[in-house]
Length: 181
Image (cartoon, rainbow, N blue to C red):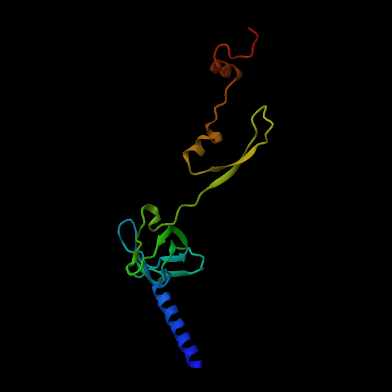
């Protein structure tokens, strides 16, 4: 009786091991790639975060080597989100990539423009209260204005032209004045 139970347990264990080995979630996948700037030079020390999207909570963080290369092996076969950080800032993200069985998933990053090495310039904004239109029962609202754009300079008080009442009437044209003709 004990021998039969042992044999049954051994067969169950063997079937479980074979099923786990053949399962699509077994750890046979690899995600790898290279990180380059806009001139093709390797970016060393960049952080690559690889996070599974299957709800398991698996997350791997690797740094690129001196040649700008990275890689993570023995990953479950599932979908992943891959995020590239340089200097603590997110530079690129791939939201849905599939790890393949027996063949590495190649994810290269080639950064362009200012994103390659320099951090993004700080955004300079301020809030401006815009009152409601005349005759409206709606309240005003706050609007964010970017100080770095040409539109902000055009909206500035330096470009306001002061007109006399007579000049304003001339700009309105005939029939537009409020007089009783």
